[in-house]
Amino acid sequence: MTPVSAQERSARLQTLVSDAQSLLSYAAANAKEIDDEIRDALIETADALTSGTLDVKGEARFYKAYQDLTKALAPVTAETLLASQTRMPRLHELTGDPRVVLRRLSTTTAGRFIHFAVFVFVLLLTGFALGHYASGTTEIDRYAKAMLDLQKSSATKREKELAQRLAQFKVGDLKNAAAGTEQDKLRDAQIELMKSADELNAAQAEIDEDQTQLAGLRESLVTWVMRPCGSFWTRLICVLPPRPDDEDISVHAQHVRPQAVFLAQLARDRMSQIVLPMLLGFLGAYTYVLRSITLDIRNRSFAPGSAIHHVVRLSLGAMAGIASSWLLSPKDVAALSSVPAWALAFVAGYSIELVFSFMDRIVSAFSSKPVT
Image (cartoon, rainbow, N blue to C red):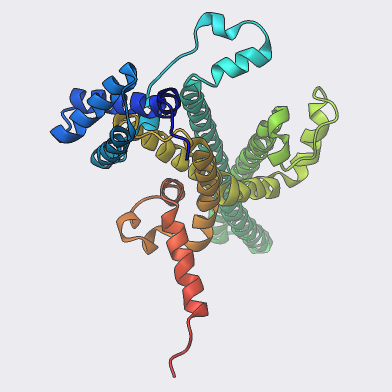
């Protein structure tokens, strides 16, 4: 076997020796206990490598010391130390050939700030969706209450109409009776007839007021249903087909108006069963990702290949948010028994294991072998 030259050994160990120096600096700066033998072996290897006197025994001693160092500092490694640093792009790195700019950006940590920007966008979008859902739900509830009031008013009107007819019959009978003592009864009956007429008019006015309120609520529901459809990016989740012309709003208002209540209930159900659980699950997963990044950077253990893990986590969080509304209710989780249903979707996105463990229990219940 041809012996390895000092230059070849130097080229082979240069990166590892540099990494070992970085780890020793981190340990010294953060009061991490390192055995004297490990520290001395690594320092002596660096000096021998610089002077070109490192031999086979020195190389073996270095690997043993480096292995002991990584065990002592795990999960911190030279890669995580480098990845945990924050390096913003400089101005001159953002100009020039786009391919060169992209290559320069790959060495920065701009992705963390992109994470923050996307998180804020999702947070604002979720807040908008919750506000839109709350306003629509309130209008639908008000419409249902107004319908009950209209039914009560209609029933009252029918009672007043019946009372007026009876009063009219009574007045007619008394008019045909002989004069005398019946005149007093006739006068009382006429007063009762006028009173019933006033009550009937009041009942009709109440019905007119309820109908006016219902008409206003229907228009409000039309506006609520069409509001998300005002933007190109939100038409896909609307109950309306895509608008051929953004200026032709009245056509779509006429399309919605006859079925305003039904379409509003449909939009509310879709938001409560799909859109909001997905957004809150995604937001919960993003909260977990940002918290994990923060903790890893603080502990200098941020892995350089975490991006794909974060993407998978976000996708699973959105799915867990939707699945939580199918599989779980707050009472199924003792710690969440008193929180709103939306909180469960957020928690499911933050901790997707909650949904997966429940799914595993369901699968195991059907796949377990019967006891013989």
